Image (cartoon, rainbow, N blue to C red; front, side, top):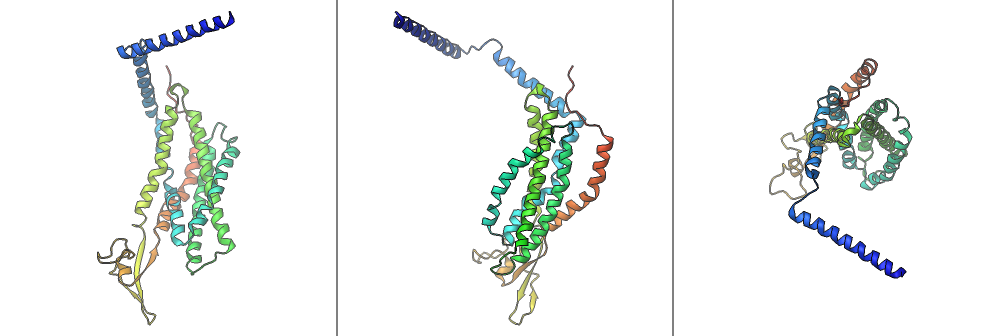
Length: 316
């Protein structure tokens, strides 16, 4: 009797499943949908973007978007070209890769350590701490690049211990400052985002922040050679350094008959290119120095006179 009951119940469940499946398939073939399903979903999406546009028109949000889009400009050359310059000056790629585990570890520990401080009413105060630290890391990187060029100018160079300490200090300081700014920024986004429009608010702010961190690097790398001044010289057998100003050191200026290893007209003419002005230093100086002189007064003025904005759309 028990087995017959179980069989009957099983058959009933199968029939219900087949009936439900057939009804779903039949409705799909006829093009029927639950009443108001598609229209209500579309209306919800449209309403969300209308609210998002209302958010964008708020003055506080516009100032925030402008800040996010431009605040990473001073760090563009440091973030985009430092590792390239270290390899160019002679640091082996294996040594550069050795920093990866350290960066991963710091990327895990730093957010845990600063999380308690970003939960307060002013999470961007941590952002303002990370900003000058990131500027300082750029100074350390410039010193590290100067030391790298000097150390690796000698064939079969064996870098001293102080060189590694300088390089590691720059990497650690940069990673700490970058994580402080990122964690504070995300905490601020979570605090001001209006839950009535879900994740669209945070997606908007994150998109602007990501664009603000990427476009300065692309622009900086594209202009790096434009700010670099090189000269072509020829060392004669008599030890006389002859300038070959008419031969270019720019890549791709060699003649069509030159070999693949000949990168420019200077090398083709038997000369050697030497850098007179380093574009990395020029970009760093023209962005960091004016900012260092003006950022502290501006920060003090803003923090003392402006209230904490609440960039949320007003609800009726």
